[in-house]
Length: 253
Length: 267
Image (cartoon, rainbow over all chains, first blue to last red; front, side, top):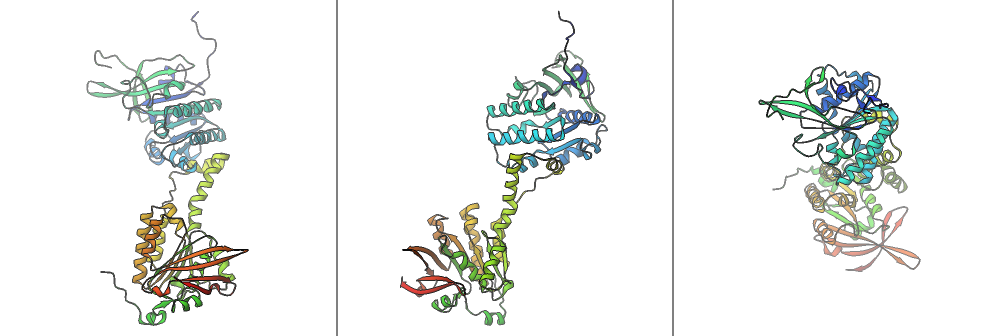
C-alpha cells in the first residue's frame, strides 16, 4: 500500500553535497524554492553553487543581485574553487544587478505599485524566455518585497513569478533574509512567501558549546519526499557540504 | 564686502554705462538703454513674443564670447533658424538645457516605457548582464544654469529663456536663491541678465519675490482686438528711473524683430 511511488517528478540536481540526498535526488523541476536564512548562514554560496552546477551541465542560469552589487559578489565568490569566472564571461551564468534592472524599467520610486510589479515579472520572464534560463536565483527577494507596500501584492508578485517560472521549466531559488531562524513561527521575512512557494529551505546557526554551527533544514518541498532533519552546513573552498547533525544532548537546539 | 572687479578701462569706455535691450527704438524710448549691472525679468503670456524678445536681446552680443542664450524649451537648431531669419549674428554662445535634459532624462524614460511594453531583446539582455552600475543622471540643471552665468566675465550679456523649467523641477526657494547669486554676479560684473517666466507658472508671492530681485520688470501681453491681436509690453518696474514705466504696443517686423509702435499711455 505504501510502496515506492509509481511516478516521480524529474529533478533538478543542485550539485550541493548532501542536499540532493536529502531531497531524494534534487529539487523537482520548475519548483520555486524559498531559501530563508540568517546573515552569514551560507544562502548566497549555496545559491551560487546551485547555478554553477547548472552551468557545468550546459544550462543557462540567471542570478539577480539585489542585496549587494554584482561586482562585489563576483569578487567574493571567486575564492571558491568550484566557481569559474569563465561561466559568467561565456554567458552561462548571467548576473544581473537589480538596481540596474529597476533603473532600466523606470522603477525609481520607493514603493512599487501593481503596474511596477507586473513590469518586473514581465522583465524577469523575458530574460528567462529569451536566454532559456533553467536555473534562477533572486538574492534576495526580501529587499524586493520591502518595496511592495502590502502583503497581498507580495503574495501576488511571488505567486505570479513562481507560476511563470514554473511554466518555463525554470527552477528558482528565492533568497529570504530572516533575523532568527526557528525562533519565529514562519520562515520568511513577510510571512506570506512561505505559503505560496513550492519549497522552503532554512539556513541558520545553532549555538553548540559557544560555537555557532551552521545548519540547513528542508521544511517543505512539494513533489518529493524529503528529510526534515537539521543538517550541519560546512562552507568549504570546494563549496557547501552537508552532514547529518549529531544530537548533542540537552541545549543542542 | 563684495569682491572687487578690476575693469579694463578700454572695456569701460567701449561698453559704457548703458547696454542695448535689442531694439534701437526701445533703447531710445528708455533714455538710451539698460544700465549695466541690471537684471531684467520678463513675465509673459504664450504668444506674446517673449521668446523672440529674449533672442533679440542676446543678438546684440557686443562681445560674442561673453554672451550666452540659455534656452530650456527650444533646440539649438530652432534657435539658429530664428537668428538666420532675422540675420542676427550667429557667433554668440547658445546652451540648450532643455535639450540636454531631454537627452538625459526623457530618452531614458522613453526607453523604460519601451522595455515595459515590448520587453527585452537578446541584445538588451546581454547589455543588461554586462551593466554593473546604474547610470544616474545627477545633473542639477539649476546649478548648471547658475554656474554658466557666474562664469561669465565683466560686461557679459545673458538671456535665460525661461525659468518655468527650473520652477517646475525645483523648490521655489532654491531657484530664488540661485537667482540672487546670478543677480549679484550681474551687478558686480556690470553684466546684463534677462530672465523670462510665463505668467501663472509661479505663485503670486514668488513672482513678487523675483520682481523684487530684478531691477526691471517687463510684462508681455497679447490681447484680441476684433479679428486681430495687439501685443503690448508693460514696463512695471525700472529701478531708479520710474519715468521709464510705460506701456508699449509693439509689432514684429522681418527687419527689426520686436519693435515698439506707439506709446499708449503713461502709468
